[in-house]
Image 1: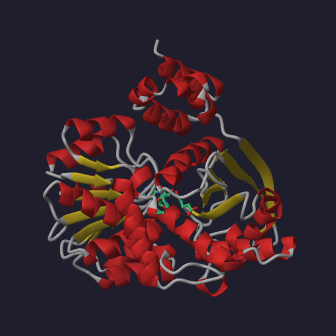
Image 2: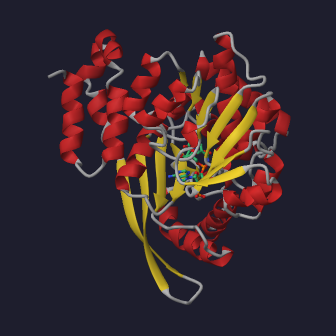
Length: 407
Ligand code: NDP
Ligand code: 2IT
């Protein structure tokens, strides 16, 4: 048994109930043998054994009161994975599927992604099994305030800087930051990123992950002699990453023919209208099925199946394990030539292998979606300098960072 395989086996034995963490550890460790062969110091100093064990894992109770006056109890997490090159940095995910294994996988991925940006940010991730779907603004506020009432003691601009992820956007960051400010009695803006513009947020942070994915994939396919012009694109999800991937894809000349949420997907052969989709999802906070009320020629289909639609480029921007081997085979059979991972670990390890064996250009998540966290670091820089840059300044820095990552 090889040295790396033994570490993978030990990881599985130690935490048998964390399949997503096993998957990410396996994905990374199965590719780094050449690095270790050239750097025996990494083996000697047990760098890999250290990296599969987070520096700190915090689990806490989150009691809050719902709209019926009933007490609800959720579980909160923060995994501070690595502070080797900077303070822990990474988002918060509110989704009923959240458990320690999922937060650990995300924190592990975040460490490598953050290092790739070239900026001095370590890796962390947090969240809760709280389900924001259908909750009123006041319920979201109650939950966020209670969550921060515990989290605040573990974070800070030089310690750990949370931001958004699934189920956490500008609204939630506002409630979280407000509570942080009250109980810490400081205006320490650099403690959270993804804030509203009026109290220390950065222009272009909201757009950054999706824009970054498109900058990365555009450069990648250009290098291989392709362009986005006229290409048929499918984007899974319709949240922050998916929406701004859609916006930039259209700006760069592609046609987005399908998008989804966890209930189903929209197909529009004329190209999905970003403004309408944005209005339904980000402003009205409704389901994607509403889209057909605005564009009756578009179709809505319940369930999975978005990857069976013929396309040139696929952008999984929803959640982990969105593309399995059957989906990958369908993409290959339909002539898709590139996949850009907007979500974290959206492709199973078997599907990655199948795509690469078939010479599909694959933009891996840790590189392709790093624009979000990179722009979070730019937000921190602006907070430290007590300055605000223009949209164009931030966007041009984002472009440079994505170019640097691709190289
Ligand atoms: P959002 O909560 O804004 O959006 C998530 C989207 O994915 C929603 O449309 C949601 O639909 C959909 N979705 C969730 N589960 C499924 C499923 N099982 N099948 C199909 N669709 C599903 O999250 P983000 O856009 O912020 O995050 C999306 C992905 O990108 C995540 O993997 C996240 O970790 C990653 N990411 C996010 C960054 C950021 O800056 N926000 C940065 C880098 C990566 P529904 O409404 O039905 O739940
Ligand atoms: O997965 C990610 O990179 C994010 N959710 C963004 C993290 C951040 O700190 O901006």
